[in-house]
Image 1 (cartoon, rainbow, N blue to C red):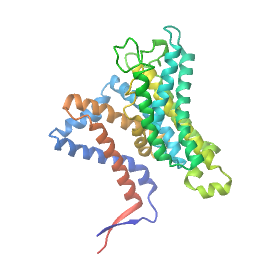
Image 2: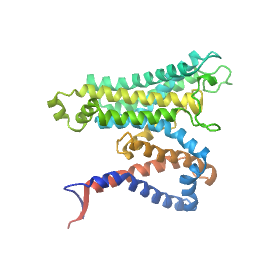
Image 3: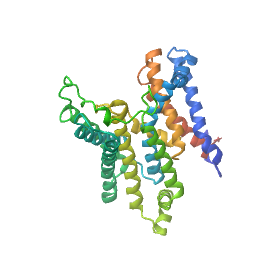
Image 4: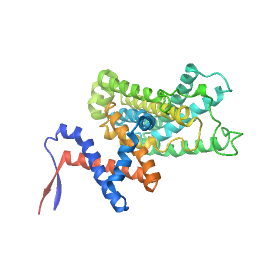
Length: 353
């Protein structure tokens, strides 16, 4: 029978090439999927991977999707490096959107706005995400609660809170009873960086967060302590590094970046608070972080791939009649392909009678 045996020395090169193999496996599985649904696989893959980037408008739309994915994935990479499994970035994004959107609605009285006001609103959104992440950090720190379960359950609390507010206190009184806030004025929206597109300043913030995340992990003593605490807790305790500090630092950084992502959506392509402010960016960013090998620069490329999945999924629905679950299917295939590649890097298959 087949048995997995641990390799004595896994290849570091193959470890870095594993995401590329995972993407190739995803493409192969996509061919099988299109054939099973009676679609031309060449046309399907072209719509999924090439159509979104055939012109400047397409690249801009991909950039709009990259922004929240990259912001959240950088924070998750820091969390996972610290061995803190924050699965609730979606909830932190939603609460950040609530805090930022509410601040924008409070300050927007039909006039004003500008860079200073946008900065204040973005800080409010980051504070909201940090406050939501702090709940998980506190319960883990004080009561040793499992951060996976706590952060995941808080996602649903955040989504219900958003639904309650857009159906109640923040609902637009002139919105014909639709569950949404009023539109923010132009002076309170993030400026577009390419005329004629929806690509806004949030992409610059996301790339800056990626660079700062790399500098924090690779070039700072605080980042070194955080990673040692995640990889070798006993060695960290012996060296006098605080595991509590690593927990709080990673959770607050991740929550703040997720809150920025949610606020950037409200001040960017949406322009208001809606019940569906996020189509699952917080959960997709978990895959982005692992495909990017938990590296703040690597997640730039994996967030681009995931953004292609979102745009390509929407195009395949409208042009090929594919079901709306196609994006989630490709995301799941990518994750399982990555896990399979990682297993075969560290283990080998052997035949035993």
